[in-house]
Amino acid sequence: MPTRKKGQTEFVQWMGPLLDCLRALGGSAKPKEVSSWIARKLGLPPEITEATIKSGANRFHNQVQWARQYLVWEGLLDDSKRGVWTLSPLGWKTQINDGLARTIFLERVKVGRSMRDQSLPKASTQEVADTVPPDEVQELSLLGVLRELPPYGFELICGRLLREHGFEDVEVTQRSRDGGIDGYGLLRLSPFVSLRVAFQAKRYKDVVSRSAVGEFRNALLGRAEKGVFITTGRFTADAAAEATRGGVVPIELIDGEELVELFQSAGIGVKPKTVYEIDHAFFDEFRRQVA
Image (cartoon, rainbow, N blue to C red; front, side, top):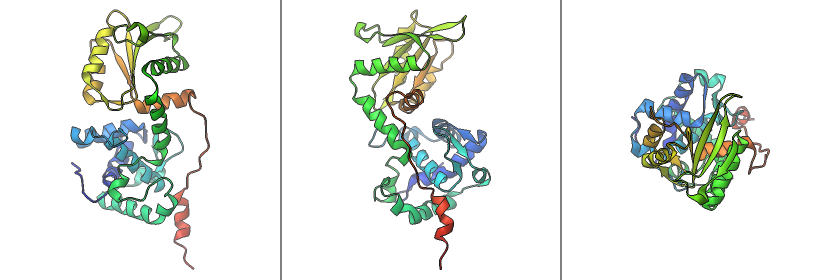
């Protein structure tokens, strides 16, 4: 099992497993699917998978995102589709061990640090692993805005989000303190079938525990056929297990990362912006040309 190496950037150890994961999953996957796969495959303990960084984000997932960023720069991942990590043709056939991962990191720092100074602060390699990957800055900014909303404002905007994603008859009930349920909505599955869904919206920075999910389910009994728990934080593994436990009312879990994706896909609270990222791989051939 990988261990923390003091004085070295830790994310390099996830480059090989990240490629292995995408090959195992058919060439593409959602970011959290990748992190979860690596954690299960390597049997990583909670002290690695549950640790956080200063922003409150999950440290392990942050490092996997950094590994992904370097693999994109190396041309091993296709960066054309947002929210999905996809192998490039070169990535399909490339195997990365610890030595190659370290070489990729050092070479990329050597040729690209001056071009990336606007995104990566000058720091030790260990400090780099505790910063935010360039393509995650917007997500964290949106999460910051959502976390600063008052509780009722956050519940109202979650109700708006549900409407934008197909829910009908959405009602926010926080002010009536309906047993821990913040609102209801009707989800039509077909002209003949619909579900009454209750939601809970919490502006957490840290983790949502199993007990919180269990308490929400208890509030659902006799009131809704399905629950949606929305948070700006993240859920523990035990909370995820509780949400999918058989024989009880099912609960969908929407964490901060998924919440941002839902806002972006619905186009609410965000404006489209064209950003050009430097293609370092394109310039590599020219850097090797010496007169």
